[in-house]
Length: 244
Image 1 (cartoon, rainbow, N blue to C red):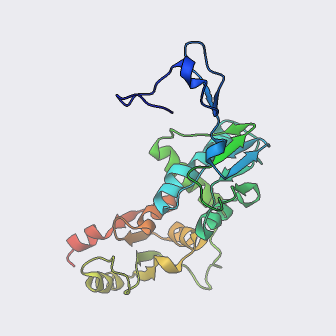
Image 2 (tube, one colour):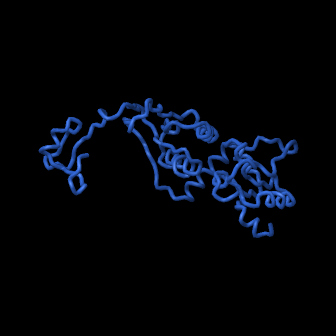
Image 3 (cartoon, rainbow, N blue to C red):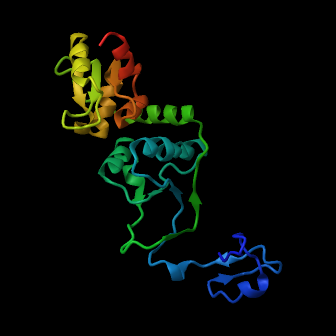
């Protein structure tokens, strides 16, 4: 919108009408409709009723800020098979929604080509949600993963470890400073050492759901995902205080 010298928006109904992309100007200039189509090269229209979830390529924000909003479909008694609209996703994001039972409802917006400064998406009827407290978000994620990611291991054949230390490979620079010492100590306590990068979403859910204790370095994406399923969760700090 045009701004004045003092950097505030100017609502002048006389000269606003000279802008071809502004219409429906109120007599006092307080309301108008801005058509940004001339400034974008990408436009999409969603004509069916849907739930817009959005998305962000960050493990923690993806689950806590976006996926957890899907609980609104159930709590607001919306149609169970409502299409779920997201921004373009990567493989692990798509995999997470498949593990949660939403694969059939998923509709990804087409990526803009070439990338414009902004994108217009029109909805005929769209539902959105937000403002869930963090405990509501985590409880919902636990519930859905518990219902849809049952452990696949057959009891007695190849049981899943009950004590796990989830960390990064030695080639990674983001590890606990005394990582080797921590691993050696935890192995004496019956822990299995696993690298989070080698596990998919379902594998993490099954492992963490069956484990009695899971330890992870603070600030890692695996540490955030532990909240979905585990009974007891610790960062590596208490281990260091225990004598390592």
